[in-house]
Every structure is written in structure tokens, then in C-alpha cells.
Length: 82
Image 1 (cartoon, rainbow, N blue to C red):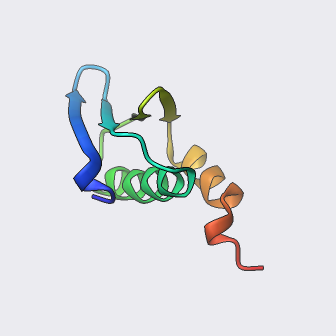
Image 2: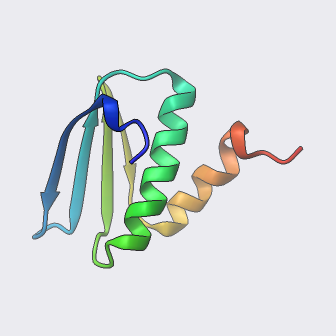
């Protein structure tokens, strides 16, 4: 997983079909890269996950489905082809 050296806690909640991942604080670009790449891996490798929660210090990002993940790809600058 991206930023694995900053990983604090990885929690599975099978009843809720949710994964929560806590990291130490990262800069904004690292947050974007980590959120989008790790969400992509998880949604493609874990068939029944419905929500992924990322915690970076006090910041929280919920990725609820693949459509929401697509919106991350559209809005972050590092993947902009222009």
C-alpha cells in the first residue's frame, strides 16, 4: 500500500463492509496519492467493501464507492493530463 511506512492502524468492519485506515500526518499531495491509489487497490481486490475511511491526523476522507473514487481522479492535479 502507498505510504505504508506512515500506516498506524488498519481496521476491518465486515458487518458494515467497511475498512478504516489511519495514517500519521502526510502533506496534501501524499494524502491525495495515498487516498486514490489505495482506494483503487482495495475496491478492485476486496469485492464486498462498500466504504473506505482514510484518517490522516485529524483529516478524514470517506470513499463510499467507485463513482466517488472516479471523482477523486477528476479533481486532483497530479493526474491532470493538461
